[in-house]
Image (tube, rainbow, N blue to C red; front, side, top):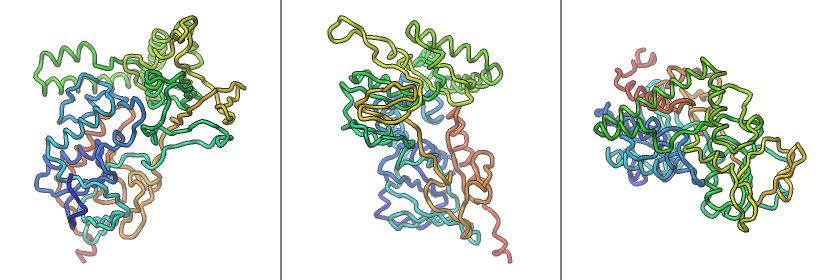
Amino acid sequence: MADASSQTVSEVDVVVLGGGISGVSMAYHLKTKCPDKTFAVLEGRGEIGGTWSLFQYPGIRSDSDMHTFGFGWKPWNKTSVISPGADIMAYLKEAVVEHELDQYIHMGKHVATAAFDSTTNKWTLTTRDGMQYVCRWLHMATGYYRYDEGYTPEWDGVEQFKGEIVHPQKWTDDIAYQGKKVVIIGSGATAVTLVPSLVEGGAEHVTMLQRSPGYYFSLPGKGDIIDHAITKILPERLSHWVVRMKYIVFQQAQFMFAKTLPKVTKWIFAAQTKLLTPRGFDIATHFTPKYNVWDERVCVVPDADFFRCLGTEKATDAKETRKRAEVVTDHIDKFTEAGIMLKSGHELEADLIVTATGLNLLNNFPCNAMGITVDGVPYDAPQAMVHRGVMISDVPCMSFTVGYANGMHACHLRTSLASSILLLPPPPPSLSQIG
């Protein structure tokens, strides 16, 4: 990667903020579509990858297929469709090296302020270490949540708990869970990933505590028979395109199906859940949401690993069986010395509590925590409107990309669109210049 600390980038045509999937994709499109444009990618951390570099909890993986989550310009050639975070990081680094994008990426450059001047139609960016970058166009690829901390609700009695409490965003390798009773608060993609990973990693017992149920659907973790047939018959790039299109069509079709026939879709989900959970499992309480499918994001469960953990296994003395993991649907009353007291009066014992309770959204989306002004007027997100999913009203010469709830390919399309904007003629001079 470029060592920005030993050089001063006085001016480039485009600055991209963020070195995650969107930032790397934007760099590729700028290099290939706009070869006459100069650009720099500023990454605030010491490594590319964004989410996949930040999160280190056990089992971290994609929650959508890698054929659409990955780049259209670089085939995903691994067998896993729902892929581990380490494989995603390797894929990103490989893409950067293959297309010689590392020369444009500057690490450790956290932008503190961005100011647009309409008299020059240029942005001036100032980093926390005092460097300045001047550009004609600013692209935000910083995501939608804060990297410094995850969201943790306030609970009574937290200070009484004698065990350890950790948010997945702050997970480190020295956190020991083997042989311990673990309670995971939350039921989203992170929780559904952690349950089987902690069970397989040696936790004594894992409980997923949720306030209300969500939708889960199991898909083959390494692709289906159609994927395998296509990759065997067709050349790599063509098979990549065909499989990618298949997943895009599937995503959109099942989303539209769910919206058109919500009752049928709920029945399909319930039927699969009943098939995959142990006999007699209380599906009505734990896996029957009050809302329709795709009113909220659906969690993908590769190879039913989450459901399989809900079964039983022989205890060490081989005379009795015990649950490896369970789902509890209830509300937290307070924390106790031994765990969590629920409003039902039941107490969950725990040695380790994992608060998989979500992310802290950026307050001034999509401008991260930096201060941004246009001719000295601060940008105020609630007063702005989004245009075409990539630009913001009253903020000139700036675009952004962010993933969609039901299709990551939309993010890549908008990255391509944002880079295409730069092919348009430069903006006219401001009125002050004309005068």
